[in-house]
Image (cartoon, rainbow, N blue to C red; front, side):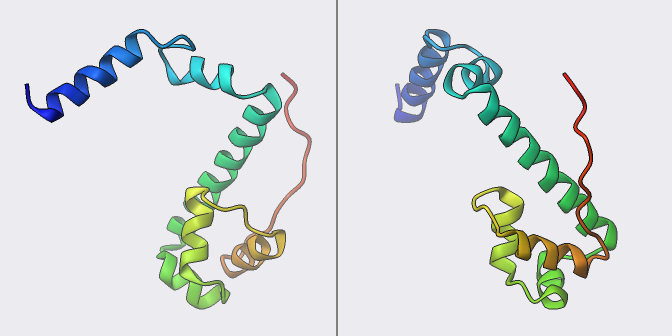
Length: 109
């Protein structure tokens, strides 16, 4: 058995016998509190809307960087969620796209 096949078999074995769950949803519920999950889901939703707005304008990350004054790597990290941008940075980039934040009530669960 080659090393790739052995690694795949190991991953399969670990997945099948994981003590915390077999799906990402199960694992998430085990590893994170409901509050952490809600915060993460909200951040993902915001960044998805951010990316959608950028693409609707037809802007690349590089073009958005040029017009907003925020460096392209910062925009990339914002979009991937690998960093938590300051509110001022978010507002600056949104303004360059003709957007702003809106605060409204969250739907009750």
